[in-house]
Length: 221
Image (cartoon, rainbow, N blue to C red):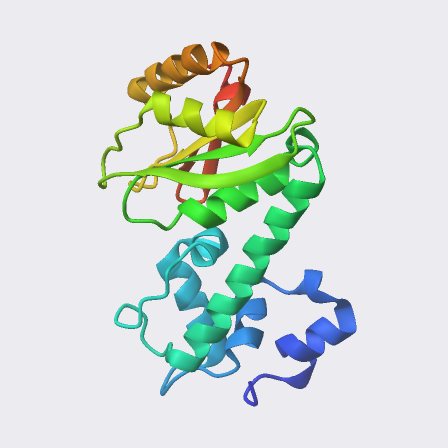
């Protein structure tokens, strides 16, 4: 940071203009504080963002030490703490407000949870009658290309939680969020099964890289 003119150093820029004035790499550089030999901290921050697929990928990443040069135990611990605080903050917001009034937070939360995973996960947001979050659960885990989903288990969990509605969520480790025909068929199966116990499926979100695709917005439900 000492090699950067004082008026454009991230810390001074933040104090003078506010955090919204900083680019993602500048904010990350403040957290990292130092780079490594031959790589200044701003360059290191940008490399880290590029390697993780941007900020959404970074927030959802598991920071494996062997994959990221220059990221030692202390920095990994600090970044993991910041990421977990961000996830918990979004989760708290979803529990306090209806999900239909917090669409951006829902997208951010599921992206942070699933975007960087190397395998498929099928998760469910269980909601009460006012569409507030009761619980988030990762119910099924699969391989890099597919996950076996059992409607009966989702029905049972809805009944045990007294859920009145759900949002279905799964990820595509390929990074392509486009829903497949199999995704559409599964959604129809789950809608039919949950309809029998008066539980509405409000949406099915597909997470791929930094993108989150909504079945409802696509007119697929």
